[in-house]
Amino acid sequence: MVKKAAHCVYDIYYHLIIVMKYRHKILTKKDYIDYLCDIINEIAERYEFEIKEIGSDGDHVHVLLISPPRYSPSRVMQILKSITAKKMFKKFPEIRKKLWGGELWSDGGYVGTVGQYKNLGDMVKYVQRQGNKFMKQGRLIDF
Image (cartoon, rainbow, N blue to C red; front, side, top):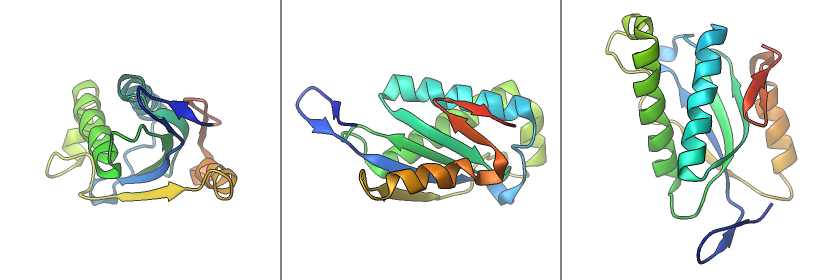
C-alpha cells in the first residue's frame, strides 16, 4: 500500500529483530507483551510508522512495519529500542533486576527490507509463527 508524505509517496517495509539483553526470556508474561505492543503502537503513531505484525519468542521481538523515507533503518531501530526500554523499565522495574547491566535490548539487531510484491506475504506469515503468538493490526492475539 503506497503511503503519502509531504513531498513523496513511499512503500518501505522493514523487518526488525530486536533481541533481549543476554537473550533472557523476559517477554513471557502477558502483561509485558501487551504493554510492549501498546508502546510500539504509540511510537508508530508518533513517528508515522505503520505496524503490520509483531511476534515474539520471549527472548526477541520481530516487528514488521512501514516507515517514512525520512527515517533510516538504523534510526527506526534506535527509536523503537530506546523508547520501549525506558517505558518498560518504568512500568516494570522488576525487569531491570533480571538484567545485570540494566539494559533491556542487546546491542545491534537485524533490519531487513521486504519487497512489496514478492516477499511481503511470506514475511507476514513468518512473523506470525514466532512462538505461536502473533499480532494482527496492532494487538497480540492467541497468547
